[in-house]
Image (cartoon, rainbow over all chains, first blue to last red; front, side, top):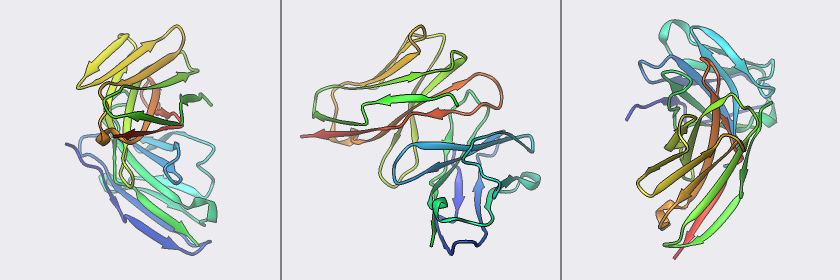
Length: 113
Length: 113
């Protein structure tokens, strides 16, 4: 089936540093999402992105977070600076439209020390 | 925000019996209700979904029911097998472009021999 690729699979950084999580969504998909999951708990919505713009963002999407997808390349989530509570698995997802199936990547496990 | 409540959080059943997971939602504009299965260390994968123009859908041992009046939907796994052991998440979204899927809190299903 369609694949969403996430790079890296695991990232360990020191608190206060910047980190960029990369996502290569399904090629013909138009909507992109980031979700945060702590230790197998609830999938918490962070942000969605369409046509080069953020559509919606949750309270978890702090000012330190930003997303972009320059010219069809990776859809990225940048956290600058990172905090301890940012440690989690971050899942990227894409869909053709918002009523279609979400295809999730394998996740990036972020460990902030 | 618009919450999606999911119960139970943990469900332990005997192999061969059925398992039921229930979700309720708040936003009456919600019209798409997917269910995801997540194995440990993996990404969530869609297993079945239902749209608001249906009350019941069945596929490969899975049944989903939707009661729009009560804002309630449920997943029923018939003849459970050890391979069904996983986390299960319900989700709900509205039909408008750009809306995101809100996830339930998850159910850890354990199928014991």
